[in-house]
Length: 211
Image (tube, rainbow, N blue to C red; front, side, top):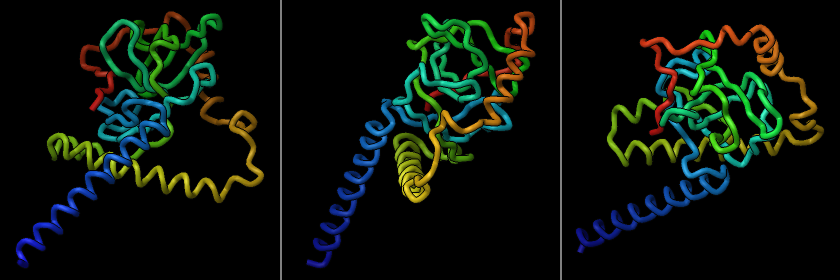
């Protein structure tokens, strides 16, 4: 009798956990407007701002034409089957909107990877970074690693939204606030001439693999 009760309780707990994880995963996808709301950084092209095994949370609901210089975005490379996370460095054309990106640690933008990028390449803007939690993907095998990351990301986002609600009074919109990242990116863009665009070194891995 006791055994049956314990087994029944254990099964019930498992079902509750599975349902909870499913709710978190579906909620993240709906809230952030993308099929995969998080990626694990797999190269050092964005060091020191993003390190290998950092988990990045992206928001696909932010429109492509709302991006600004200095924003970090995730996108499909134009001429390669890669998912990349780099920083917006320049607007190349307004109609249609075409941009160029660059890895913070890269000496220049990579043709066919960083540019030309249009709406069709865009996946989402990086809105949150969880340092080094991507190590879970090396220690544990799917689907356990993805489940753990989804739970952690969900908890972090809920906490962040809860915190932001307490600070909303009197805050200007992001368009009204000065951004040091944007200023630095704009200055960098002015200094980066066409001749400085460079192909990737053989030893360099600019891509960020989707986990």
